[in-house]
Length: 522
Image (cartoon, rainbow, N blue to C red; front, side):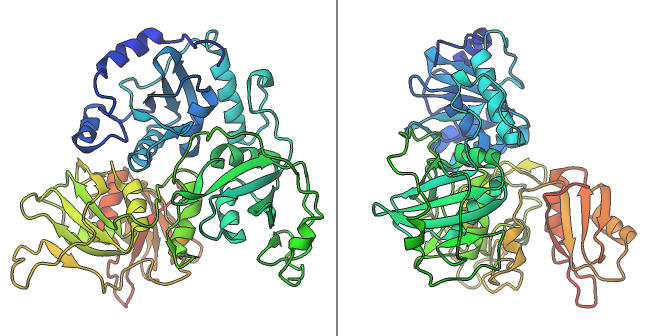
C-alpha cells in the first residue's frame, strides 16, 4: 500500500474507541459469551474489520466481501491494522457476518475479526481515497461484467488476458472431478470447456469461460479456497492459451458446446500434453482472503453427496459455510418465541436446508431447541441461512451444538411433547437422489415458490389461504401450467411464518402444497 488512506479517520477513531479491550469482543467469529454482544450493535451494511496484517492491500480486504455481494466503499486505517467495508445492502452484510461466524476469516493466513459498524454508511473523501476507489472501480467492473477502466498502474486487476484459467489443486487428499469443477466455476459465468490432467505429480485443469471477465471474477473469488475441508486448495492463474482444443467428452475433458464429440478411450492425458499448457511455476500466492473452508463438501467414501454438490455453487458465492466431515449435525437454536415455536414448525423451517431427524425444545429453557440434521454439511447450510432471521417476532440465533445427537426421552417422560423424532418422515426434501430440491436451496426471502397446486385452486384461493396465516400478500404469479406459482409476502418474517404454517398443507384430493423460498421476485 502506498501510504495511509486518511479518509474518515476521525469517525473511525470515535468508533474504534468503543471497541477497546479484548480483540474477541463483538466479533463475528469470537467465542463463547462474546458472541452475544453482537446484539448490542444492530446489523449494518458497514462492517468493521480488525487485526489485519501489516501492509495488507485494499484488494485483499475487498476480497473478503466480494463473494457476498457488491462492495460499495472501503476505508483503510493502516496505522491501526483496521478497515471499514461497505456492502450494497444490509442483507449482504448479514450473510457475510453469519458466514464468518462459522468460518474464521483469514487474510494472508492470519485470522481477522469482523463485526457490524455503528455507522450506516461510509462517507469518504474521494480525493484522499483515490487508490481505494480505483480498486473498488475495478472490482465493481468485474462484478458487473465490464472491463475495469481504472488506473491499472496501482492495481492487480488489469484487463483479463484470457478466458482460460489454469487451476492447480494442492493438498489433494480426495479426488476432484471435472463435474465438481464445472459446478463450482459455473457460478461465475458460462463454462465452455474443461481439460484435466496430471503434471509434475499434481492434478491440474484448464477451464475456459465464454468471457474473460467471468474468468477474472472466478479467479478473484476462488483463488486460495478449499474444495473440501482443509484440503484440495484451488490455485488459479490465467493461462497463456486463449482457446482450448478438446477432442473427447469424457471424465478427463469436456466441450460443453459440442455434445457430439466422441468419448475416446478415456485416457486423454497424452493429448493434453500437446495443448501447450503453460510451464513454469505460478506467481506467488499470498492466500488472498484465505477462505479456509468456504467450498468444503462433505465426503463419504470418496463420493460427493448430491446435497453437497448442489451447495457447492452457493458456497462458491460465499453464501454458505460448509466444513464437511467431522462437524456435528446438531444445531442449537436460541432466542425463540417459546409461546409460538413447536418441534413441527422447527422441522419445517430447518427442513428447507436439510433432512431434520429430531427436534428437542429444552425443558428448562423453552426459548432454545436442539435440531438434528442428517449430517454436518446440512447443519452448516441451515445455520448459514437461518442465523439472524426473525421468527415469530424474535431474532433467532443458530449455532453448532456440542451434542452429536439429540437423545429421545424415555417413554412416558415427555408429557409436554417437547421432543419429536422425524427420522421416518415422508416430508424430507433431500432423501431422493437427483431431486430438483438439490438445485433450489435459497436464503429466506419474502417471495415463496409454491408447487403441487391443485387444479381447482385459483389465485384468490391462495391469496386468502396465505393472508389467513397472518401475512399480507403483496404479489402473486402463476406459472404457465398453474401447478406452480410465486407469492410475495410483505416481509421475510411473514414468508418464514407462512412457510412453516402451509408447507405440506392438505388441499384435498391427495394434493399437499409444497412451499420453499424463491430467488425470484414478482
